[in-house]
Length: 374
Ligand code: SF4
Image (cartoon, rainbow, N blue to C red; front, side, top):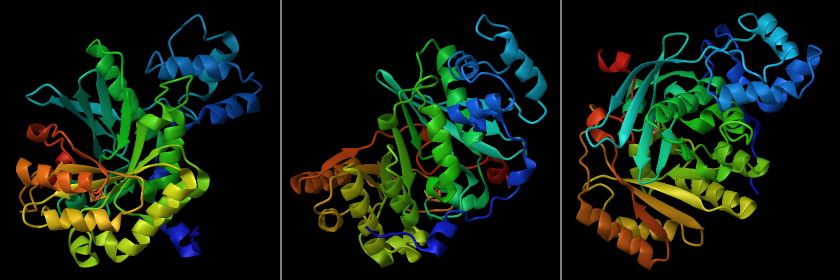
């Protein structure tokens, strides 16, 4: 298996963690065991973590109110530490916009430093999926993506990702729904460029004592950060991996996804093969269909050849409109023909349902309102 070079590991920290140290550490940054350690360090028995976790992640409290399971030692600890070395702050929801078909809600969130991010709740028959952001902006610069067009601002902390899931849960509860079934990291940002905070957040939201989103229902999406893919494999992380591909030659892919210059297709597909062989997991490939650019049967045949032998599922995404990219979405006939070629080659393939286009909540459409209004 290909290991990581020193420079590849360092790359996971790029772009720089701008303003990171200026934001108070939130209780939502802590994993369950972090919380136990904090309690023990202050002479409080670790079992109190269970009550606090219930308040935060099951009752979804935004302040810890009096409750029969908040016993005096925990209350005293909270009184001493909340708003001093630990906050209960979460990004504020400044707007909630629903799509006309009622299936999608886009939440606009304002972070402590006034950066804005977006979280999308997508409804499907009998289930809800949250699409969360991992960075404010994005440095990857994919040409068809509104977030890429706005540039990179900063990485999100784990607690800022966890808060998005909690806001989605609150929103669903207010609608009388039981809650989220799936979480996808496909909002603003490249998750594997913020690796440590992402894994920390996923450990928190998948904890069975709290929000309990099963690891098999969580998908990390990457545009092709090879060291991150290898690290997921090496660490045996239990989440699904989705890789946005969009092209089968380096020239075509680099024109759409500039990160391909850094990790060309051979390295990317090699990492996917390593990931699949090491983890035994299927790799999900995303392919945004752009009319007359990558939507022909020949493109589909070349894709099948590129991923031959991999346990792979291809998701076809119809291009959503953004301000700075003039490519057009392929029609349904082209999508069906593309899918047929892949299925005949033995791959599972799905044409994704479009969601939330009218409220700019579709794939690649998320960008901060601050930037849009410039
Ligand atoms: S598609 Fe994803 S990785 Fe590419 S610019 Fe947009 S947010 Fe970043």
